[in-house]
Each structure stands twice: as structure tokens, then as C-alpha cells.
Image 1 (cartoon, rainbow, N blue to C red):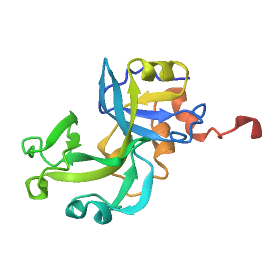
Image 2 (cartoon, rainbow, N blue to C red):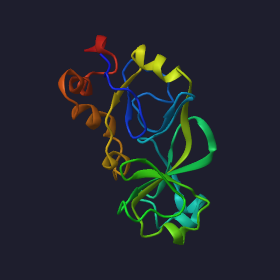
Image 3 (spheres, rainbow, N blue to C red):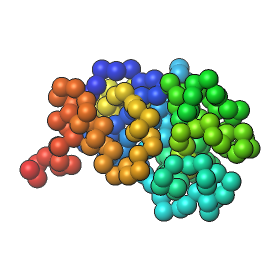
Length: 188
């Protein structure tokens, strides 16, 4: 069973049990950009042991707990991408590009003092997940991803270990049942 929603910025991709690629097994991906050329997102539930202060010292006081980098995906892992949550829709700082509602991408080249105080939360990701034109649609059709609505609270949880199950559990209908499905149903 897959969801019927079309992927768009701000939505979540939730890996199905059929997706065994170690880069994406049991992941939740926030889509940041979806167009005819492809899609780009970040994995929300892969924190690393690397403190933000070790690699991006200036941003250490702006990021949400836990103050670590997250593994955003297998593409361009040497680069960093930040997702922020605005405090006020009327106070959009320089370097912020809206994605959905109050969520957006923060340009890490922006001086911190121009952003500080404008965000309720910010998370920094090393790398990202990307799909070429029609690639994501094919993966959804083959049953690798559920496409579901996202929430800013999904992005900024203190503990992301239960995110995959929690996102599935809150879905309507049969999709919620997949949160309790074992990785290998034959072992059940």
C-alpha cells in the first residue's frame, strides 16, 4: 500500500519496509524542492555524533537540540544545508527561502546576526537526498515510499529515533498499521 498524495515541497517521504537501501531504510525525508527536473530533500532521523560547533561554530547557538549535524542524505555529504522554522511569517530574515508554511531553507553564508531571533528552530544537514526527473515517481510507484503531510515538529524533534513509527502511526486508515509491521514479516 502506498499513499495517493503527490510529492511536493514540505511533504514527507516515509521509507516503506520494501526499501532496503541502507541510505534510506526506515528514514523520513522532508522534501524541500520538487519540480519537473526532480526532487531534493533531507533525511530527518539520522543524527550524527558531530556537534555543529565543531564544523559551523557561528551557528551553534541557533540550531535546535540536539546541537549536532544530521546526515541529510548520500549526495554532497561534504556540504551543509540548513532548514529553519520562522517565528513569525512577517519577519523573514535575509537568507531564508520559504518551502512550506513557516519552514524554509537557511543560507549558511548569511551572517548569523541577520537570522538570529527570527527562527523558532534550525537544523543543519550534511548532504541531501536527490532524485532525477521521474525517478521519485518511479520509486513511489514501485512501493518504496509513502508520501504524507509533514509538520515542523517532525523536523525539530529532540529525539528523532521514533520519528519513522510516529509519522506512520498518525496517518489515517491502513497506513497507520505499517508502523507496527516488522522489518521481515516472515519472522513474525
